[in-house]
Image (tube, rainbow, N blue to C red; front, side):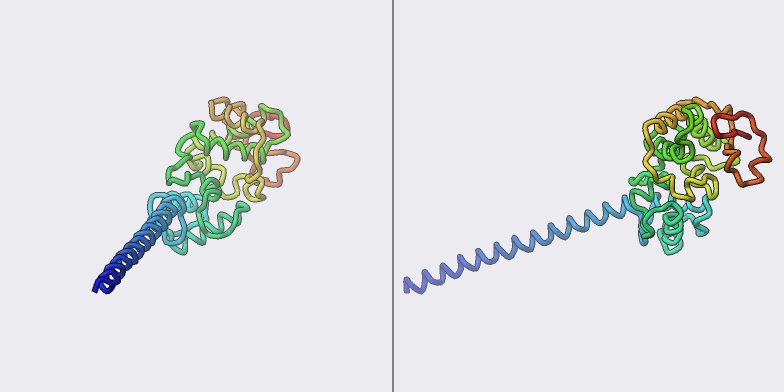
Length: 241
């Protein structure tokens, strides 16, 4: 009897242990699944792609529509039209054509990965400074310093003009506005001189005296640009209004 009773007690203990192990495994699995879901939700909030929705998607649609890549509604829904527009933008700017608005694509558009808009003003924030520095490096590296500041100032003058988009990114990525965007040089890493020139322009220095355009007379092929009123020449560039 005692042996049978002891055997039953051991079986009960073993069953309890097994039950505790099973419950622990289930709790662990639930925890892992919850974490995976959390990560996925966080990724969707900071990485817009097909199926995403929200304010960040609206910003993407708005900008791509301004630049001629997107012709759908600005509804904050990342559907097939938005995906194709992002792919076109990526192709035009030397980015991976995956249709996903990841960190590099958002930076090129001028939008922070948290959904905020980094191009609302000409203040010296990191997004404007980085993009403007890349524009200066692509368009005017090798020019004297004042000429590089003048090129940056032209971008900012356009931002302030009602004739152009009202953000640094909007001006730079406006379709056909700058050759370095179409040939991919906008993605080159700027040197310290270009960064300093962009910062000086953001701080208010305008050696271009309010110019809205500039061109190199030795390489310009557009007859239209020659119709603009030239106000001054700095280095290889003529500045005009």
